[in-house]
Length: 371
Image (cartoon, rainbow, N blue to C red; front, side, top):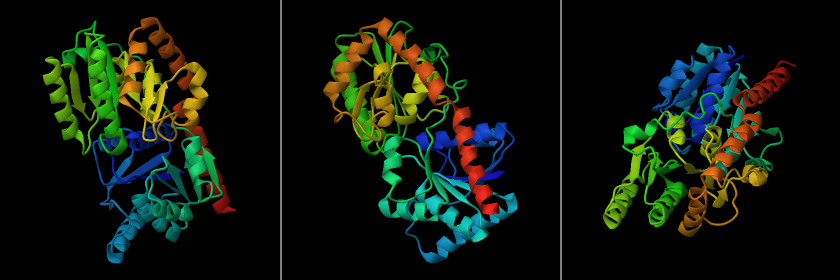
């Protein structure tokens, strides 16, 4: 089995991190994995895992002139021939459509993982028309693609619980945060709805700071709204006459940042990674607000993918403030949530189980093609 993993780019994000986790575990099992993407800061990690990397200048949208499209398809075909690829696994629509077209020409089956409900409708329809099978990462995503493809399966994001594990608070020293401070970490790409959540989060931290004077907050992530976030941080620091908000940009070793936190605010894969690190999670995502992820609400949290693909209500500064206060006021409750969360992720979302299922999809398609 020789797998061709195709992504638009290799910058840090939920989709890209998931693809890396799959590729790393597959490579460790002796599966050959080649990767095509525009490039990005994750490229070295794919390479270190044993993957072949091909940098291809994928467009940001599929509407490009036919000559350019044909050049890219032929480039992908050449890689598939060189690498003797037996299955193509796409994760995003522009790159995936081009790779699937090339794979069709060579008689290679195509798997597409739908990571959300945000794909442009026309691109998603074309991608699923070209795909041999689809994987949905959450129940709402599966429902979203039901009308578009019959051969589909629900396989959640897999988490490497050895990589994402409690590491202690050593990361605080680098940021100049006292060991006895209360620390909240927010992680996401600073674009679109998640940038808006970041603004609400920072304002909520300003509100909470009055009750918890030792509070510090760390924002991990980059994106087109980073400069706007910087401006808000400067304004809050001027108002509070104290610097307690830390913008650290994109980071490769997220387990360090989750581990220095007392509470993590995030959604989707961030929520799962943080829970694997033994941290309580307050979930808010693209769709809206979920709130504190508690054992009694695990099924509901998974059903809406921690606010990313569904939610309890719209997100607001007030809701964030109220739940942050509740969590920060109770160290014992935070510890209980952290312990329970890590065990749940270990049982339900382990990367080995996820890869077992993905390889099963590959095998069924290859068996079908050969027969």
